[in-house]
Length: 274
Image 1 (cartoon, rainbow, N blue to C red):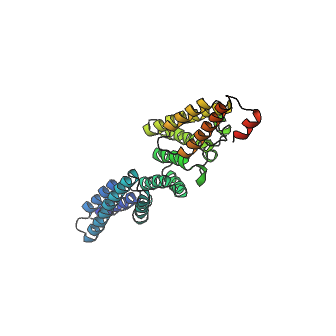
Image 2: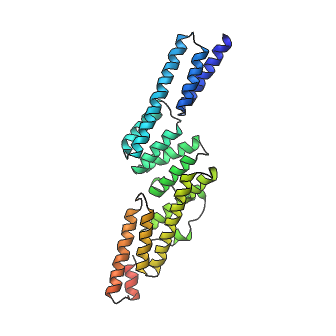
Image 3: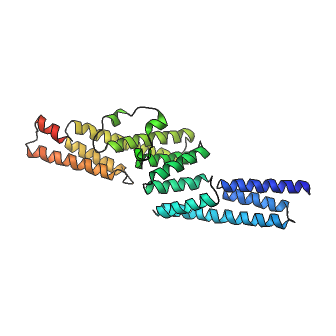
């Protein structure tokens, strides 16, 4: 009897720890093990029943949060995630990352940064956290203190350093995202979503480099073509404003060049480049 009581307590403590971390099914299984070890204890039965109900509600809430994020109901997703984290599972990494994803989409970049940092603290080898970090770096960038140098310790590439036009932010953000995605593939080499996103980001970076080269050569046709290629790779429209500004500038300068017979004086060129 004494051994059974000790085992039941151990199972129940394990269930509580699992619940704190968001392992709903494992927590429920451990709680049932505790109940089997103390079948005659009404107190244990009540505690197990309460834990099972908490796990069930939290798991349902987690699924509803995921659905909210998928449908773009980001403010509601953040509120629901906060409720789960505060009341049931403060160490639930997947709930933290769902709130971070909603925060990125809502441009609540400070919230996203804090949640990603906490998720990486709880799960230092987590690939999912690195994928969400890459999205945050693309869409929030330095506005929330995310930076390539902080995470990688390297200087920016030539593509970024030579780009000081409307797409400069996009170039920096994409390079930082690629670093996070490379880190994701380091901890999980077979991660398909990180590999796919990194390929797209690198292709987008090449398109921006082509646009910058064409801009430097005042080849507005090729600049516009490269910007069109970049826009096609910007699947979530994260850089639509910057792309539209760069394309508007290139189109205006092309029209001026054609209007002046295809050439511009060096003084005019210097005035109109910015």
